[in-house]
Length: 270
Image 1 (cartoon, rainbow, N blue to C red):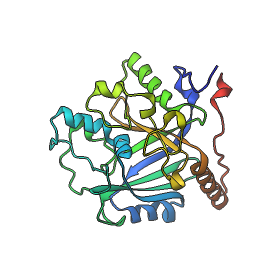
Image 2: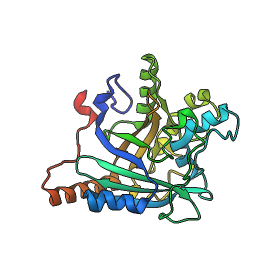
Image 3: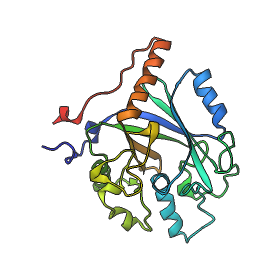
């Protein structure tokens, strides 16, 4: 049996807990100070001014489709435009607390610095289904840790299918532009998860061979859960995994904890 191509209906077999909680913040500097200097978390990895079409669709595709359904450029839908880095960009900080991490997300004007406030201060134009949009402060979301040897693209498609069968409303973003829910469902497997490395089976021209720096080995897809809650499913491999393990060890050393990085593979459940 090929573990990468077969997904069971009990998706707990493919997870290894919650990997991190994401928080969208107004003030990155003060937020980082609070979670590291006050609460004692260990900075794992950080990056500033991220942008790009694939990242934009990864985060905001559901909101984009809703905007199209309400007519293009509807004032009821307002999300940052991080497609090319000319308007808004994303800053990120990951902080380890041993058994779980916290991710700080900060969307800002591309012309400003990471010390600027969030991209929009008066968030009054908000469609009802957009209240969980990750661009808004202080939205929080859960990121589930998928085991290393699971095909994350097929996992996402199978998870959606299982939820449809149960009449549970779950929507997984794709990483390319689509203009309707039907088009989203019909996209190929390779457009489901955002992989931060070269994968010949899911190669995307102009992206898969990029220099992903410290985030090399990260993979994720965003989804909206049955209550509209923001969810992420991710894998942490290669270089980024080493950085998280390093942060976890530093946390253990400073606070006399004994947290271990999860290592179970799906093969143990076959």
